[in-house]
Image (cartoon, rainbow, N blue to C red; front, top):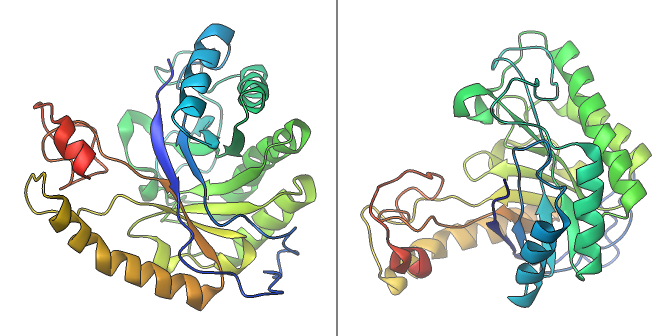
Amino acid sequence: MLAVGLVVGLGVGPLAPGHSGGSSAGPVPGPVQERQHGFALPTYSRDGYDDPRVLDDRLRHLADVGAGWVQITPTWFQAAADAPEVTRAPASAAWQTPDDAGVRNVIARAHRHGLKVLLKPHVDLPDGESRSSIRPRDPTTWFASYTAFVTHYARLAAETGVEQFAVGTELEGVSGERDAWLDVIRAVRADYPGPLVYAANYDEYPRVAFWDAVDLMGVDAYWPVSARPTHDVRALERAWRPIREELARFSAEHGRRILFTEAGYVSQRGSTTAPYSWTISTTPDQSEQAAG
């Protein structure tokens, strides 16, 4: 099973000339490009990245509509929000971790279609509970487990020539732990030479404690931009204006560009009121999706 989601790169603040982005987590490997446009291609099947015909069909379509990037998101899991370990999905689970051969396969095929790759490993919880609620009862053990998980994919990213790597996604419950994250990022940089991003949720990013240690500030851009369902593009543009202004200020303050690591609206009525919801209503509405 493969799904496709929109990812938009947004350069809202220039990197100062000569700014290396260096930090106690290690030097930044070089400048990052100003804009990225692409799609996420997640799977929750063990063999979801295996079928060459399905992959080539999806990737060709992404390239044909103008995407330059594709985001690959292998997912591991933990048993509960306070669990101390991150593991691959058990064989009996409904949602699965794609095998490494499949991840390598989709990366190679993306490159053949002229797409650059952001490898963005996720950690999820059972029953669709938000990963933002992860607050391990034993943080030391959890960060050691998380480091093993993320460096596994950092090495895979280096071996396959991935152009960009995410050190984490929407981990609001632990993203304030600066020292622990600096250790994670040092370990990742030891294995992967390219640019790093952390993908914060739209209401998390101001509290992330280690923006100076990564190369791009990622934001999963699911701001509600309307109080009621609407097709009014001008009203939606007005709602976005203060968000853009705040992001530009934040970007300049931290000397990092912002990448919308996730963004988009489902084709359901009311999607602009809660873009993060896949079940906002049972009424199809592609016009509201397009307006958003």
